Length: 156
Image (cartoon, rainbow, N blue to C red; front, side):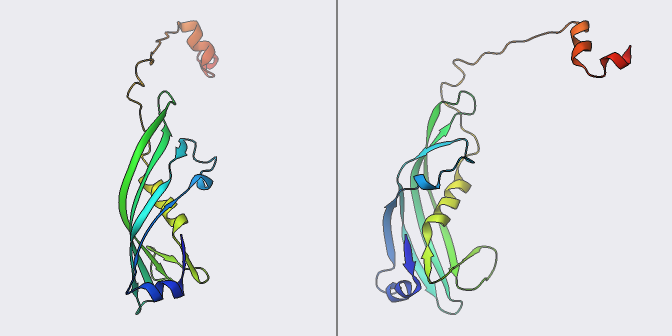
C-alpha cells in the first residue's frame, strides 16, 4: 500500500488506521528455494507523524500463511504467521532502523515483505517426514578406502 506524504499528514489526526489485504506472489523469487507459496497477506495497524523529525511510525500487524518445503522430505508445510512490528520512515536518514522515503510516497509492501522474510522460520519439518525416512549404513573395506582417498596411494 502506498501513501503520499501529503495524505499521511492530512489523515494523521482523523483517520490514522489502515487495514488491507495484499498479494505478495510477485515478491517470490528463485532465490527463495524453500518458499513454495504465500497466502494473501493481511496488513493492519495505525501510523503516527512525528513532525520534529519528519518521521512516520507505522505499528503494523501482519497475518499470512507461508507454504514452505519440508527440510527432510520436501513436502509442502503450511506455516501460519501472525506478528506485529513497528516500521519507521523518514525523509532524511536518521539511523539504520529507519527506512528512507524515496520521492513523495511511502510504500509499505516491500518493507512488509522484508519483515515476513525475517520472521520466516529457517527450517520446517513435516509431521510425517520421518515416516519414509531411512538410513543405510555402508562400510568400506581397506581397498575401497584406499581408492577413495586421493592420498591413499602416497601412504603405500
